Length: 200
Image 1 (spheres, rainbow, N blue to C red):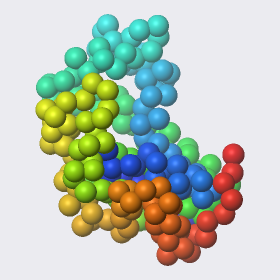
Image 2 (image 1 turned 60 degrees about the vertical axis):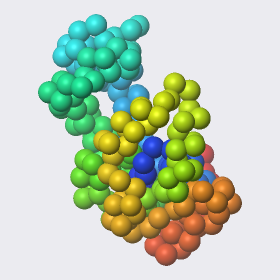
Image 3 (image 1 turned 120 degrees about the horizontal axis):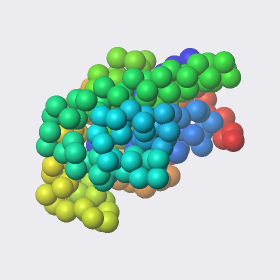
Image 4 (image 1 turned 60 degrees about the horizontal axis):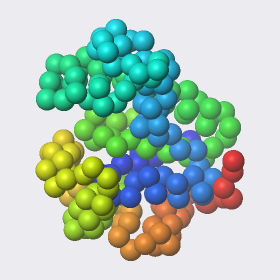
């Protein structure tokens, strides 16, 4: 089974591209979704113990947690020490299930793939990209987003040009969904994983 890492900077269309891989019948594991699930379950007691007052109705309140770790590298490290091993466990269980189900390939959708060294766990890496102006327009259209916030997020991410240079495949999402779907199909053919009908 081929493990395909999927990543891309904010506003590049990664979520949509992940859906295109799922549409082609491949199992997709979202690191963000795994964190959301952990915040509502397994990680909640440990986070509350490490950062008192962050739970709301038994679920981690991301805003309260954000206030406690924002601009505090030590606090962020403590949080990552709680969350990262649990995310990796969820990822390992997902890959095992995909293998047992005979999937020819599985997608690991990880926003900070290069930033966290996640590419070492993947056979190939797909980077989702778009021209800067397209990215900026998409991100600034999000509720509560500002130019300053956008640039602060970019500072934490490996630059798009470097991601593209390190990728095995690049999907350009600036030309619309049909073009992106065709690029996903071409990647799967290049890997010898012919698109099948979507399942589930």
